[in-house]
Length: 209
Image 1 (spheres, helix red, strand yellow):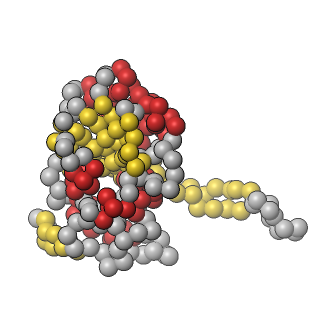
Image 2 (spheres, rainbow, N blue to C red):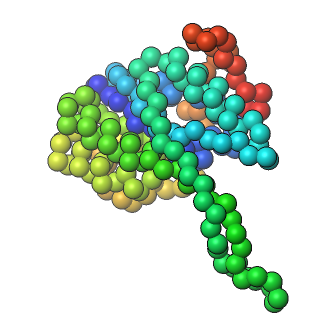
Image 3 (cartoon, rainbow, N blue to C red):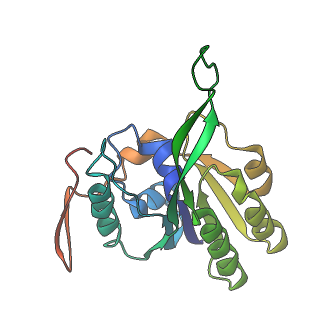
């Protein structure tokens, strides 16, 4: 079955690999591990460029290495949203007498990836680009486009929940054709080589990973 993957990059990172040794993830191997009997045509990866912070000065460098590594995979496309930083005031849960009731926080929000994923999922469905779509995310905001593709277009949509500790959101369960879980065994089998090459030279797995 002709299959496209639509990967919510930050949902995958935060829910599946953040606290593991499996960050150097080969998304094509992952797709083939999860759906060995299907023809993986296209992998669309949705993310945003991070900014390093004083407590993590190499974050940008690590992400850049990974994005370069993904760029060597056939049929993989990277679609970018953006990060927005704002200073917000938030109330303390239990302020002590005499202390301020509110604090200033630096709030970072990733914008655009879910909209970009939903748009691409719908457009590819309209144009008959796939027989089956696989959405790697547990974000309930994607339930509406998934529901449209599965019910109105009559195409198969599989949701892969990257969080092995949390149930798949009910809205996604009700909208998709069926749902699957992503387990550490899938991640372990789907790692990139420690070094790769592209037109710019050698790409090396970050030491911290």
